[in-house]
Length: 90
Image (tube, rainbow, N blue to C red; front, top):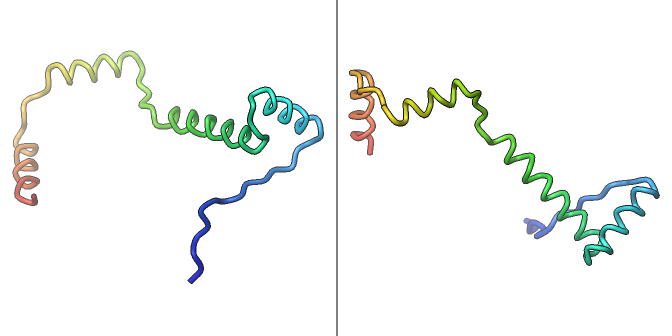
C-alpha cells in the first residue's frame, strides 16, 4: 500500500494583475508567494470556521439563557430518571 503524502498541493489560475498584486504583497511581507497564499488562505479559513461555529443569539434569547444559567430550573422526574440512567451506564 502506498504511503500517504505528508503534504497536498493546491493550485489556482489567476489573471496577470492578480498575480502581480499577490507577488508584490508577498515580497513586502517577506514571504514566498506560496507561503503568503497559504497563510492568507488559512487565516481566512479560520475566520470563516470561527464565525460559523459561534452561537448567535438575539438580545432576548441571550437574556433568557443567562437567566437560566443563574437560576436553573429544578429537576423534574424525567430529568432525574435520565441522570440515573446515565450514571448506571458509566
